[in-house]
Length: 192
Length: 176
Image 1 (cartoon, rainbow over the protein chains, first blue to last red):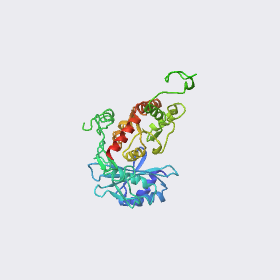
Image 2 (image 1 turned 45 degrees about the horizontal axis):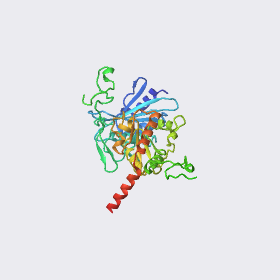
Image 3 (image 1 turned 180 degrees about the vertical axis):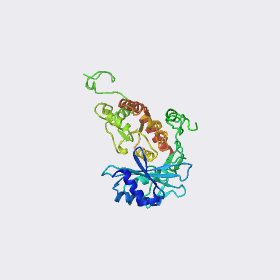
Image 4 (image 1 turned 90 degrees about the vertical axis):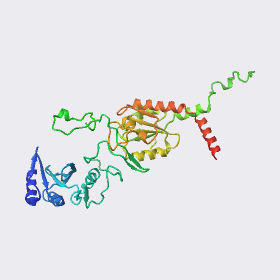
């Protein structure tokens, strides 16, 4: 069974909840309309379609758009090597979706990382603590409105942070439609 | 037969006497057994291991006794990127080291944050502990580590240990 067939089975099972599978460079993506149903889709993919390995969960900050967050799940079937990708959107006001630890236990640390870096909470997660930054750090550094240099913060007597000096800015990329040479990371002042 | 002069040549003690000051002797003992605390945090620690191994052989300078207990070490070698999360740990280990103590910031990251101009990285370990010698390089070669160690030895060799101890004792007496 190919990845596209699996994706079509998910589509047949859940109907309007998921979009038609899209293919890009041989990779199949399904978008799930309601983030609250993510567990059902994942459980079906694992139990019925053999996607027994959760490769990664990542999150995207569509800053300035609504809904702001996109959560991306990469699934893999060890048996035949098929991979599919599930996406679902979460609004900034809500910033919460169900945890899928009940389906794949490895989701635990992936979800903690997303909580740490993006500030999206996972309902039903047994241990939703920061995983990279320390307890008490006030920001979520992978959000687009968080500056590359960082922000000042202080926990008295424990730790502090200061914005890093970026004069001449090392390795800054500019989002634009220009060619690769003018987009590539190079020394730039942040406000340029 | 004894010589007449007190200061004259005495064959019985020839070759067994060295004249020096107590300060210089203490400094000499001290500088040739600097026990490092290897604070290995990133790839610099691999070069630090190379300096300890047979090709570069840090024991030629009396520093082969790498101590993983801060209470037994004299010189903390901060080898690698210091993140803000690690910073309180590093500070605490430094505080646990007994006086006298020295710090070597090994490599660009420990000295200035290096290429990590980032929210997560402390921009130089001298923000939290006093550094005696900085080593450039990413990572520095073991020769550079040995050179830094020799600079620390020079520094220790010039320290008026006894003078300082006596001065501190006198100050304590005056205060109490």
